Image (tube, rainbow, N blue to C red; front, side, top):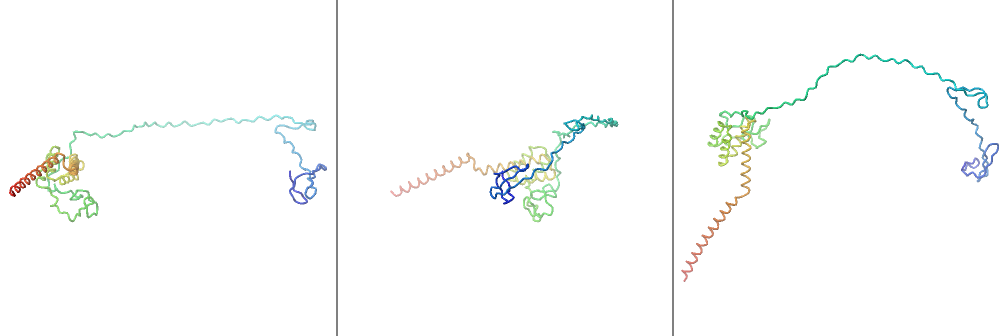
Length: 271
């Protein structure tokens, strides 16, 4: 235990102390000064009175004693029940089940009617590129699909041949017969006019976008051209290669025999 000496203001340990008149006196081991602690002058706290109890004389050896006093019972206020107004009955609205409208598709529905044979049969409709039949954008001087400058378009350069024009007019009369479409595609493939056939189908779709026959014909053009390009890129077939090889070997054999005969004749002439 340490304390601060009043003589030297040092913090020293308590070594020598005495009790004088209920007061503690401590001697400083450094300077020898005595420091006295004054007794506490605070009084003990008196007990707080307990509610409901009174002191009577003679209790605890004194003049008063604690007597329990009766606690008055609390007065309960009458409970008033609120009067509720009758609730209004709201009409119950029945919930309608969700109904999804179904579209009836009839397999025997008539297809698009064929186009009329008019003077613009081989020209793109207004609002489309005259070459590739792509939609024309506003304020555009050239086609974004094929790059054609509209001012430089020459209609005579994009007309089908007479045979193709005749076959296309005949196809329009039997438009719903797919065999007729297949014959036209085969003829166009043999004559190398598949680009023109595809252009004719695109012009048909520009006038009738929901035409199933035109959609099928356009897709068939793409399929056949792609197949022909793939076969051409793969090179000749094995059968054709064998035929070419046999022909080359025959030519080499004939040339060798001719040279051998010439050599024999020259040797005979020298002897």
